[in-house]
Image (cartoon, rainbow, N blue to C red; front, side):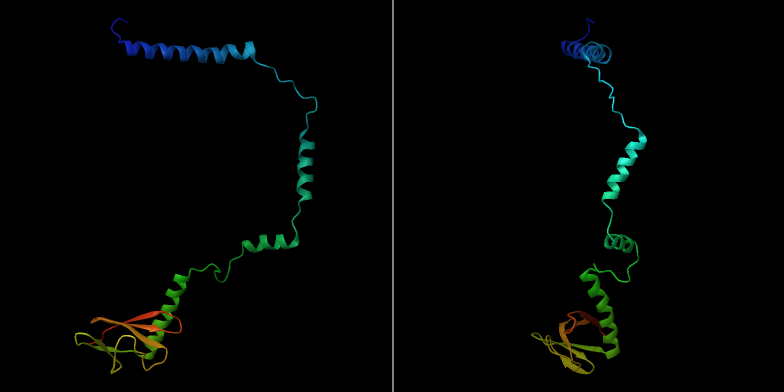
Length: 164
C-alpha cells in the first residue's frame, strides 16, 4: 500500500465504506429496526375480488350507440374523410391533364420579343394572363419548353410541353 498515491487511498476508503454500508443495510438494518407488517384479518378471496370487479364493470355498460361506434371503427371506409388537400389537388390535376388532352391543347410555338413572351397554342397567339378560346383556361406562364395553363374552375395548373 505504500506505492499508492493519496488520491487512490481516498477512493479505496470511500469504496470500502460503501461496501460496509451495503452489508449493514442488507443484513442488519431490517432485523434491528424493521417493522413487521401485521397480516390483515379481512383478506379477500379470489371469488369476492372478481365478483366486485364484475359488479363495477356492469355498472358502466355501454349504450347501443357506443356499441355501434365501436363496431363501425373496424369497418373499412369507402373514402377517407381526412383526405389531405394537396393529395386531392394532385388527384384533380390528373383529371385536368386528361381534360387538357381531351381539349387537344397543342403548344406549338414560342415567341420572345424582348418585353413580351407569346405562346402559340392551337395556332392562336397568347400572352401571359390571357384567357384561351376554350372557356375556363388562362395562360399563367410561358417558357421555351412548356406553357402553364390555369383552370379557373378548380384552381389547378396544367403544364403542356412544346410539340415541335
